[in-house]
Image (cartoon, rainbow, N blue to C red; front, side, top):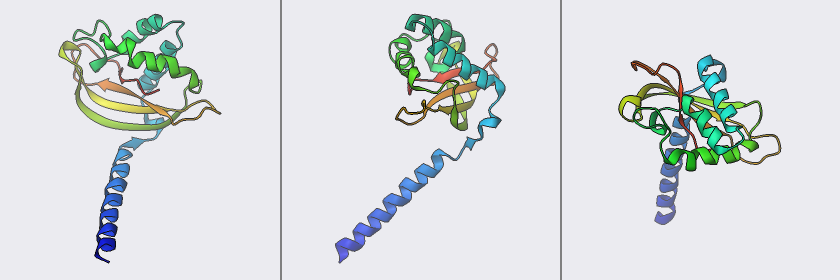
Length: 165
């Protein structure tokens, strides 16, 4: 009888923790209508970059909208591993996502920093989930875009999180 009691206690504690974590994950969700137009434009620009003929052209188109840890300290080129891993993954899988992009969820949070050196930025991060095409199995995938604040030269939103498509 004691084993059953302690088993139920452990199960209720586990469920409490899981429920709390799941609730926190949506704590900062906002309606898609509240996403700034400049952020939506960067999201669309990322979609255009992913539609390029080659991965190399995709990387060239992506560089102007990439930021934070995706670029070198000067912000002048993508970090070496970005094109061969996370960008390549998104580029290869983009064909499975709805066109035009369909936003299913947005989470907004403050970040004290992303990146290194002169290209490091802080500001509001919009984690935007986009949906798959009809008939394609799988969950929507996120792309994170930061609106930099108080940076001397970087004023426009930058994509800071990719590789989940």
